[in-house]
Image 1 (cartoon, rainbow over the protein chains, first blue to last red):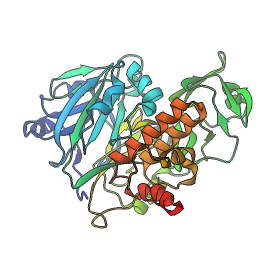
Image 2 (image 1 turned 90 degrees about the horizontal axis):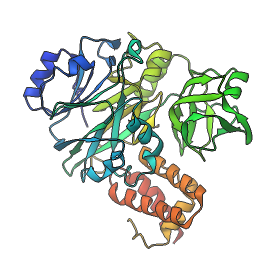
Image 3 (image 1 turned 90 degrees about the vertical axis):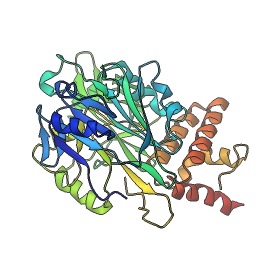
Image 4 (image 1 turned 135 degrees about the horizontal axis):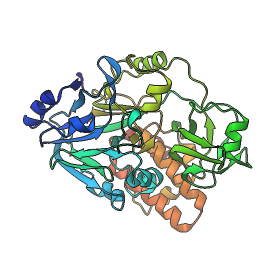
Length: 344
Length: 79
């Protein structure tokens, strides 16, 4: 139902002008810039990579701001630490949606990723967001952060969530664009849920996963893909420790779920544009993965009209990898301005 | 259109998620969660699956209206 796109790269001064108008904002940028924002109705996360109006960019000099529409009301901003993160659904609005930003590499990040989908009520309202990150040159030197704009509080250990409600005639919808498809090679499953993997089952035969990746010369830029009743859910490989025979992942694999490595993808940019042309969506919020930015070399390239942060993890109810996540607002009247659910 | 939680149809739905071609992302995630619960095979996990399905469809009547038609329409056809 939205026809414009209030997402933009801007200076701190311009963002403060929006804050002072009382607008509800989602903000992404470098820590030093976010700390210069005035208190107001915003949440933010650290990241210097963006899908911008100029194409893929990395910048330490601008921030990206998404202006939420006036229909989004009854704003409530809360932090949830590792012990409390499962309580997010208790604060869902009756007809609303919630934005979450989680600092990467934190305990709350790991707990949400491993357990979130099991929490009662987590799917009951649209939950969308991202995992904050840092410039890759700063890895190991600084931690990703999230900000509560109302209080000015900053955290590298708690998730920040903006809960919002909507008028009765509107509802929010979360969806994804994942260009990766399951390949036709081995099916792989894991005895335990986790970010670190030793043994796995390759076509029902137990094998060390690190050995498998090395022996088969698997292209580690391709994610593992699970089929969730037609939705393709990725898990990306972070590193392989051949000595300890452990594989580290960017999201957990789940036991009782079957994975296959993705088919190779040629020209992410053009395939992405084709998928968007098919779907004709105009989302309010969207984010994409740092791995897509790096592997598909998106710097300077436009991902159609999609603008938003390039993140260390995308959240559509659960943690995703190498996926574009978006949120749309839809009118409730059946048959009137109601868009069909696009292909995932 | 959403039957009460005590209706046996809920047990059928959580037992046969693979029979339904659903379109909304959260429904697909719900069905995968139910599939994981089915693997554990305890009576508590089946109760959890029914609770999750009932709460989800009750609270998302508009957002997953097409999926509600697919799931409950199919059940109604059987009756």
